[in-house]
Length: 218
Image (cartoon, rainbow, N blue to C red; front, top):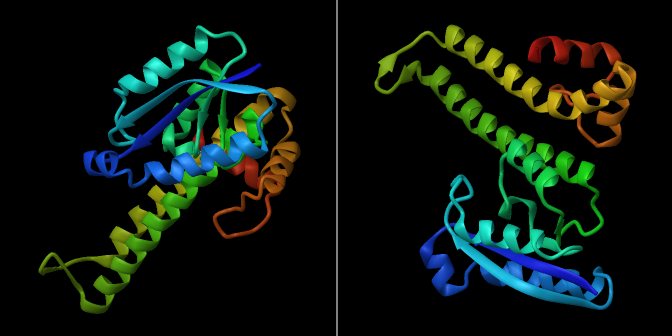
């Protein structure tokens, strides 16, 4: 019989007490169990943390992982990947430490889960960069920042380099395992393209672009 340990997380005490946020997680988990789980199955435990996803101290998650490890063949089940973490490195650690399933992407393999985590992190970074770009545009129009004049060109140059470095650091997390295995920039480029990950200019990857990313990240 398939066994699951359910883990849920909400960010605030108010959400935990009111059920806001938990209802959506319960719905996704129920859909998974009803339509995608092996039969028969059993839920052997349910744990809920009420804290930020950035918090490293999650007592209920620790209990859930301990229960999974103590029950051979069982899996941790979460509604969405970000209920475990929003950090790619943390997700990679979970993939190595404990078997888990994500209700909203029920057929994803461990490698795909890693890629989804990278894509989600890139999306958050894009939103952050978009907000910064809007603020920079407003500052260029007014020539003011925090009530004073500033040199826009120098600030934007530093910002662009920082953004490029951050992008390279994220992409290398997908590229490195492929290069370690095959040593082929072309194969790494193909993996990125097949995963739907575009370059910073929104183009498909080529071997030379992957090489530049590796050099920047190195």
